Length: 478
Image (tube, rainbow, N blue to C red; front, side):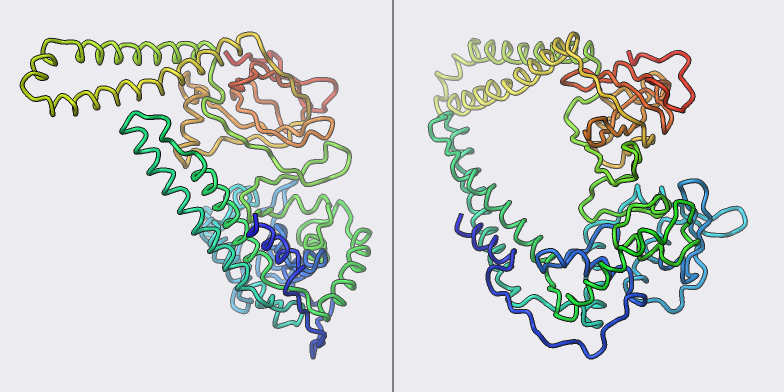
């Protein structure tokens, strides 16, 4: 708790805050400021701590289009980017260009292109974000907008102390668990140390992330510059119309950096340094940025009948293993072995007892799975909203492949797709796994019926006048 309190005070500039009053020799003009630096400065105006906004990289791409480094061919709400002249660019722009090149594909005429949807759905990794943020930070320091935070080592020391406590707690907890499990004595199991270890590791992670994200403070010149940027943001609201394209207005990059929500920003790939899925939606009448909830749980999308069958089968296997273990322990071979070698019997008994304890895991898991299937036979919940995205689920990782398998992807020759719905009543956006035959088009207002626990979509059907073509026979996902 003491480490957490000190970290909170340092992170919010209640301790060790010393901002220099020295003005920069040459303050950048608002019109000439790089969009990524402008986003960094505007985000740093709140509390004096500078964060790199998610749209900073997107604004930098719009700026490269304005400079002619990237060529953008706009089609509806998407854009196709191709490289032109990459000789004279800054360090942070060079990072963006190298990242774009890794995602480009060569067309029939030999041109390398990438669309905004591909970039938005394939985010850079955390290490790339650290390098990019450092490049933008150094650029802001050169312009005199920000300065390095004094006593930065304080946050790093707090993160190290919390990490040492956390690792110690986890190790001691694991040793206690091994002793209790090997001796078959639950009373020797100590849960306090692992609990303290997990909490300390979380504090260490928060402190380290804060040290990275708040490594800079706005200088005096930076605070004055931010006021001019805020005034410029008010002017940009009326400077850009909904008909402007990525290359149709020189103010698009500045508007994206300032966080102005306009239709044109839908054509620019939107990034997230925290691996959050962000998407634009105009369901409420005005274009806004929403976060898509993707709290995946084991067995999501599984049919209720499959869950019941799988749960009962798991229980049966566990019961058979326990019966076999009991038969072996009560057999004549075990009795004769006890007479010949008492020490060997002790080891065999511990092994059989360990097997008996391990069978409790499939017993409990199978029971929970079967119970969830029984509940889902009767309990459903309904969501209503507007479809804002439809795409195939990613299957790069083991958890994603398991999710597609449980949902029945490819089992009956029909693909499973992710339908993102912006829910009514400010419920945010949520992704549903849906049979491709039942997927509603983007723009349709739908009502989704989903089971309560395993989240199997039973039906998805348009409601009211959505403007989208109606589905002739709404498909029930069996």
